[in-house]
Length: 94
Image (tube, rainbow, N blue to C red; front, side):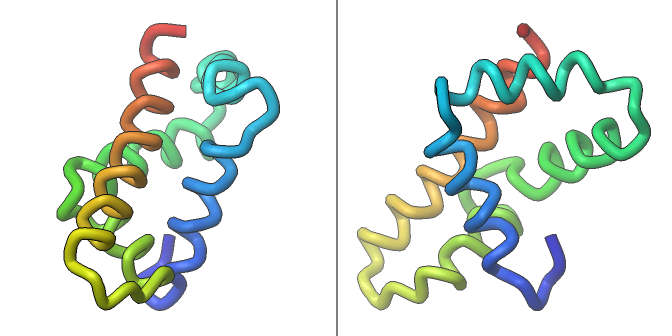
């Protein structure tokens, strides 16, 4: 996720939200590939960028949506955070 591409964070969350079979099969695939350098690095970046709803990742999703409504922004940030954290949790426990 680059600082000038909020769509990257949005796209990742969209894929998690709409992945066939849900997050579990995707997380299991990533867990099976954790020894691959790129996957390991990506998991570390996701942990860092989605540490909490106010972190960089969820805030990039908000930038993509560009909603002026504070309550809607809060829900969007929370949803992005929860999707990625569930994905990371399932990788750790798959």
